[in-house]
Image (cartoon, rainbow, N blue to C red; front, side, top):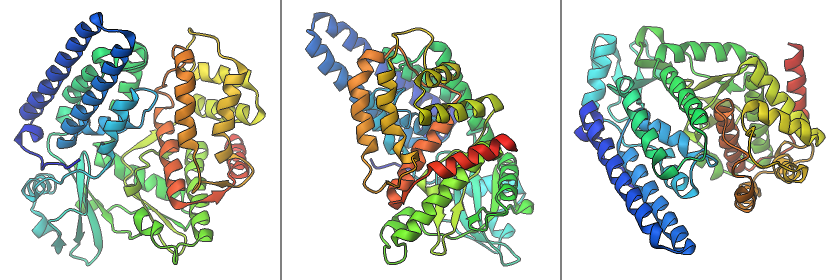
Length: 445
């Protein structure tokens, strides 16, 4: 889907409100029409029309959010990864939001830098590229060189993003509630939106991100193969963050360079990435939770570069213990214990149909092999297809038994995102020994 450049209608608070209100009104009208029509339709016709309605709503939401910056687009990106929260047609349409977005005009960026750092980029830096290096939902990144000759990247937050969070999220929530699109209870939805809002608040505080960068650099200091940019404090503020430039090959380059990135190196990169993320979760108790491919780069010497530490999930002790027990129950095929942990996390509803051990066993047989003690070929993995098929086959029976949990929302995002990283790297590895060792280390620390 082509993205238009941001306009007045999508970059000012008044323009955003008008655009979101227009979309909400349009969708509400279509939902109302569908509700009337189904009174006179057969079940087959109702199902066919509902699928058509979902696809239309998905396209309309994706198109509108794709034109916009800020919280509403960011929430749309997160929602697109929540397959168990939205109808398939809408989640599929929103997946386009994961792609790079159109940049803001440089005049906007120039004013923002001057407002935050006290002068224009041309004066603050020896060189400042007007064309952005990358553009995302809440800010964009420009290459630059300091007056001391250091190559840096400058992350500039778009104006008025923070001020529009509450309005954006109210509108998006209303849209997703229309026609019963969401599959969760109201209290669960409250918790999910609260988790997303808290995460957005942190991402919009670049001083907080600077602290995150320093903390993660210290944690990974003994892993020389993990590269995290350093902060240039003198050229940073709440909404501008200047970091050392750390080069690396993107995923497309790695995938097309078999002569450089052979199988042994790909396996090493996958094992190192798994080690870094698992240690963050179980030892540091914080994890970099934006697995977008653009936030990672790779080097032929086996190094991994991680960018963008605005999205960090801090994991409470009780949640960490629950994740550990959930993993151990799965390995032990102790499905009574597994269900107990799922209830504790709010994934298994306290009400709803009883769930058999055979149901859990079927899911465990699908989900555990990538974390098993035998080498798993991610390049040839069809896990995602099998999971989709399994969901279609069983969702009708257990629809009222399960729901997403705000407590695992962002960790699930990490695991799902990095599954695709391992698939695209073509990794062949067995991760169970490493995972069990790290979990054991975390219990003794």
